[in-house]
Amino acid sequence: MKYQCCVCSSRFEGSQIKDDFKNGVKEGFLCPQCGANIKDDMSGETAFDKKAKGTYSFYAFLLAIFFLDSKIEQYISTPLGANNWLVIGLLFGLAAIIYGFANRGLLKEANVLTTQRVSA
Image (tube, rainbow, N blue to C red; front, side):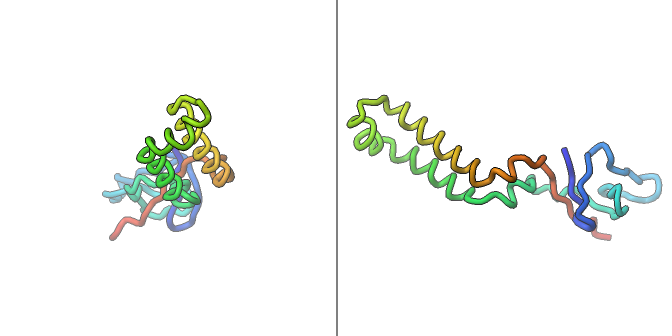
C-alpha cells in the first residue's frame, strides 16, 4: 500500500515510513521525503475514490436495476425470450464496463492512501 504525503505530495510505500518514537514523535509517522509528521487520515479513501468520475451515478444505476427487476422482466426479458437473471447480469456488466472506461486512467494507478498533518 502506498501513502501520499499531505505536505509535499510525494508517494511512498508503507515500508518506507520513518517511525521516530525515540525522538519524541508520539503520534503518526514521518514522511521519508520531507520529514513532516503525518498520519493516515483514517477516511479509508484512496486517490481513486476521490478522483473517480460517476461513482454516485454508477451506484444509482445498480440500485435502479435491482429495484426495477420486475419491470426489466416485463419489458426486456420476456420479449427477448431471455432469462431475467441473464439480462440483469448483462446490465450490471454493462454498468461496470462503462464505469471502468470512464475511469480508465485511474485504474492503472496504485491505491494510494491520503494522510493528514498531526496536530502539535
